[in-house]
Length: 340
Image: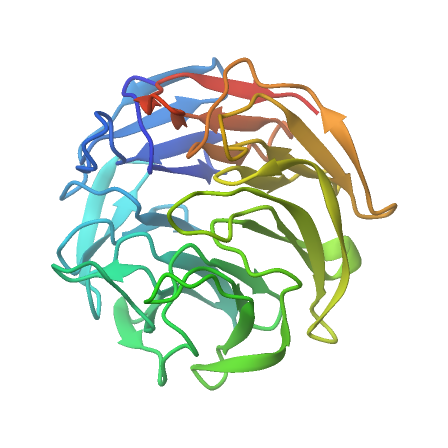
C-alpha cells in the first residue's frame, strides 16, 4: 500500500475489479486517517485517492452499488459518507443516530432494497460499549434506529447477513468486558433484535463469522475470551441458519484471534492467521464444509494481525493488506495475494 494501515477497511469494487482501502491508523497512535487508496488487480499497484470527509479508524465500508460505498463510524462524530469509488469522491454525508467506533455492519438485501445495519461498538467520550443499532436505507438516504436494543451491549462481536433479510449477531464483550456466548438475530421485517435460546459453545470475541451457502450455516472460528490478555481460542463451531442452533464444533489447527476468514469461490473458507496469544503467525488454514475438515494452506510472507482480507471476485484470489506485527505493534504497508 502507499500508506501503512491497521484498523482500516478494504472493499472490493466489482465494476473495476479493484479494492478501495480507507482510513485506519498508521502510527500506532490510534488516530484515524482520512486517506484512501485503490488497489488495481490488473497490475497489482496501489494509488492514493482523495481524502474522506474526516479521519476514521475501526470504521466500516459496505458496497451498495456502482457509485456508492457507505463508510460509517470510526470517529467522534455522527457523520457517515457515501463514497463514489469510480469517481473517487464523497458524494454526500449522512447523519447517523449516534457516533460509533469498532462497531459491526451487515449489508442486507431485503425486498429489493439494500440496507446497512450498524450495531454495537464504542461511543461517547468515555468510550462506553453500545447496545443500540441503526439501519441505513439506500432509497431514503437516511439512518433510522432499530426499534429495540440488543440483549447486551457488544464490541468484538460478529454480524453476518443471511438470506431473507436476517442478520445473526454473536459473541463479543459486554459493557463490563465479560465475554459473551449469546446469539441474537436482527429481523428486517420488524426492525427488531430477537435473542435466541441457542448459545455459542464457547464465549468468544474478536472471532470470525462466515456464512457458507452450500451448507446453510455460519462458521465461527477462534477469537479470545479474555478482553485484557488476548488468550487465543483454537475452536470453531457451525450455526445452522434453518434450525437456529449450533450443530457442530471442533478444533482448529492453530489458536487465533485478530485474523480473517474469507469464503473462496470454490466454497472453502480461508483463515489467515492473526495473533496466537503470544505472537503473530504466518500460518493459514482452509476449511472444507463438505468434509468438515481443516488443512494447512500456504503461509503468509509476513506475520500480521488486524489486517484485511478481500476476495477478488474476478480472479478468486484474496488480497491481504496491512495490519500490525506483535508484540512491537509495527504498522505494515505490505500487501500479499493468496492464490487458491
